Image 1 (cartoon, rainbow, N blue to C red):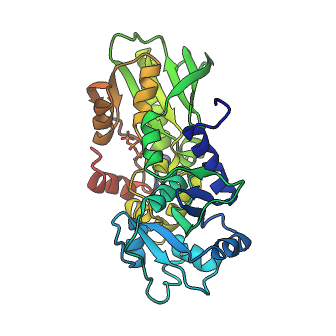
Image 2 (image 1 turned 120 degrees about the horizontal axis):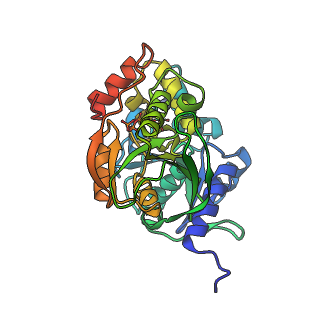
Image 3 (image 1 turned 45 degrees about the vertical axis):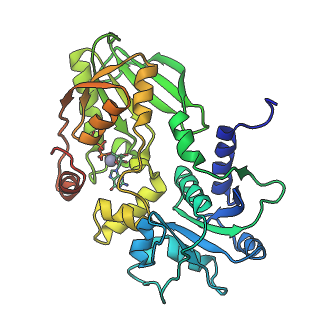
Length: 352
Ligand SMILES: Nc1nc2c(ncn2[C@@H]2O[C@H](COP(=O)(O)OP(=O)(O)OP(=O)(O)O)[C@@H](O)[C@H]2O)c(=O)[nH]1
Ligand SMILES: [Zn+2]
């Protein structure tokens, strides 16, 4: 019956549930985000059975907890542990000031499919990847997801469509249009700035820009995003045509709150990659299939890509967009982002 939510619709609901602190059913397990968990909900979950805290292998490494499952660890939650204890395990903010007391014990047997799905959902909700889990059926009223690698499957199938566009004269290029594209999984919208009227049958000068509120809007000196954004638009304006995709993947896909957590760790001396790992994220959580899908929706199949990131070139090629040329975009170095750019070159393979 068409009034029953599809899997994509259910996942979209589940993401919102996690953000407000509601548990979600993952197969035969219930899971709630540590970040939004209330003491009352923790007590309710405890009443159903022994609870474990699922964290990523990255976070487990920092905690020196054995990750028997490789990419994730199931930390046993002691009977006396409260929400503050769970948050301290999940959030590295105070790792240095208050190192975790006592060893953490982790589970090694059993099916980890529900835990993996729970962590993937937490990441897609831009929450800390740490989930309190208990083996129990979801009571009436809670969102239930089927077991299995549903999120990954879905990401591959997610489509997006242009919903509106209008002329938008820019300082850098007066003949411009802004297109808004909306994904069909309930996720955030993304934008495309089309400059001039580029032909669809020729390679277009293109830039895939990931959102950076701090750099793009505030002019932060900690990164090179603002200058890159403006230089790309100016180059396209000068050439008379181009397309700039503005992908709302703040902080390489971890969201602004987590990026600020990462910045705080950077103030404590960790670099950009180490900070992501301590929080439990990979270096880069962006899904560049999105960029390829947007280009295709706008009618482009070949690009001259403005980037210093060889991964972006590979990802475009492997998702069906021909990259006929890589156009370097090296701007905005200053004394505050010197080390950040050096880490991008040395650890992330950027051609700088
Ligand atoms: N997690 C995290 N994200 C950051 C940090 N600094 C900038 N970002 C984000 O990184 C993204 C920009 O990616 P970059 O790695 O600078 O550049 P790129 O887009 O991969 O490569 P280029 O095409 O060469 O610019 C934006 O989403 C920023 O918000 C940081 O220290 N930590
Ligand atoms: Zn930035």
